[in-house]
Amino acid sequence: MAAWLFVATLSSLLLVHNGGLSGLDGETAYETAKVFTEHGRFDVGAGFNTTTGVGGLEYAKSNLGLPLLAAVVYAISTPLAWLAPGQSYLARTALVGASMTLVTAAIVVAVFGLARTLGAPPSSSLIVGIGAVAGTYLLPYSKEFFAEPLSALGLLIAIERSLANRPMAAGTGLALAILARSPSLLCIPVLLFVVVRRCGWRGAWMAALPVGISIVLTAAYNIVRFGDPFLFGYQNEGFTMPFLRGAHMLLLEPTKSVVLFAPIVLLLPWAVMRLWREDRTALLLIGTTLAITFAVTALWHNPNGGWCWGPRLLIPGIPPALAAVGLWLDRPSHRRVAIALLIAGFAISAPAVAVSTQIQQLDVPPPAGGVWPPDLGLPKIARQAELVPVTAAYTLRHLYERKTDGRNYLRYLTLWQIGLTRVFGRTGLIVAMSASVVLALLVMWSAWRCRVAYDAMDARA
Image (cartoon, rainbow, N blue to C red; front, side):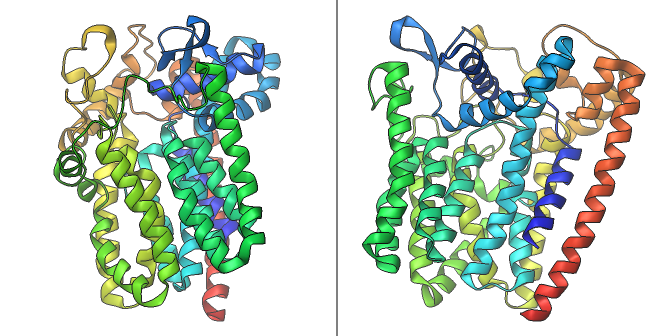
């Protein structure tokens, strides 16, 4: 069931991927991976999301996880540089960007697995598993290259494996989350506390091993970049936002309200009450993860997370919490409510899948220096929906056009099929359509196999 669910989700996400790297964070991670793979260094050139470090050089701000993922894909794609050197950059950035679909598909499976471990039936687990991505603002992030989905996957693994009494795997999940985003370090005490209670001190040592490795790697990466194990690349930024103001932004501000971008979170109070009655250890793990994520984000100087779709910095805590909703879906009326909220969430974020949210930057003059302040024209839900038919019409009229103004890609539907057509003309269109048909058939076949496995699982349940 899990395997076919992963294949079906991955194939669906690949069908609508943009085929590249659209954000500065992703481009910075790619450049870091490229420089390290080819030259054994970590510094990158100007124009990326960097901080000045050792030797006066520029280094990526983010932790090691995202560049590490990019480096693995970059290394695997080396044969492409030999076969088609003229197009190696396009191919490699496409593969690195598409690797986020693997992470997102794994999140669907991990939420499904956590809901099952909590005791939810297969049908409810499937609803929250698919809904955690398709029914929330996490969906557009399958087309971006940010660290938050990778951190969310690590935390999901850590929580589920802790509850399944698998300390080594739990520690590995938390290690992944730490490598993706350093605030995940705050989750270590609770995870080890739970592991000690359920698996004893031997289990705690097993969980601590991968966590310790991730801490050593993080410290070493910081030393190489900034000469200090405790400097993470955000020396000029910090936790300066008043908590109530940051919380108001995350809960009530129209451009960042988690309630608007993930309406399913309205059911979290009922999920918490159910967990309180049935599994307080799970509530401790899930609740602490969500609380830490929310508090850290609210106190950060820019809870907006920059120009992005919805409250990006809250992503690590959302999927584990939604898995708990699966327990509450034990009545038909509850399921109808949850499905309605997930459909609403999909309707809100679907325009951000069809069209890059950066298209709204065309509505306002670019700021001096090209750096967008957090309070200037953040992408809005209604405006994004308005731009979809306009962008689709422009795409059809200018299908083969290739301007070089640096912003032309924003005027097109953000689909790799369109990009392939613009670069290679009619040949690219034929290849894109053929590959899309193959992917669509794979979606249908894997969905059918998933249904067969689901029926067998439901019968056993």
